[in-house]
Length: 152
Image (tube, rainbow, N blue to C red; front, side, top):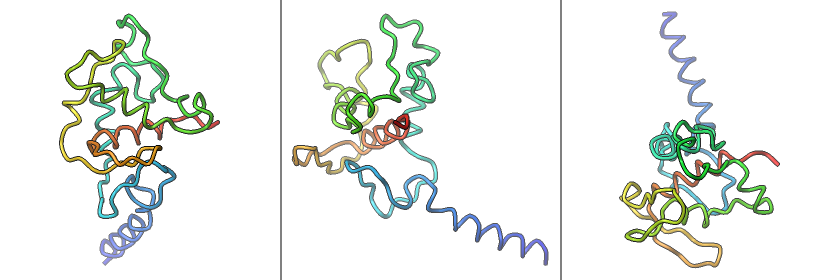
């Protein structure tokens, strides 16, 4: 009997916290709106970032990843992008930098990630108003980078 009551309390507690899970509840991102049917508990952008970015930029985006010291150019601190852009997260520039230009030399020493971010594409509205078909994985990782921004 006690186990059943405890299980019920745990379920009610977890369901009440659902608005705090990634992909649930509201978002302050004006450039990215995940679909309403998304119920991922693990942030897909965090997974992509951990696999492809953290080695150089560090887990918290501070530019202190283990591989960064061996590069000819120190990886930038990603946490100040919004502050450096007048308080607006530069989503379009971050997407260009991460995605690269498939089939062309990527500027700087950062690799191009177009092939890793393949898969389903969704509509993304650029600040210019243009609708661009964009890989979902790219939007996910850019949303994660936005979440790393320092409070100004």
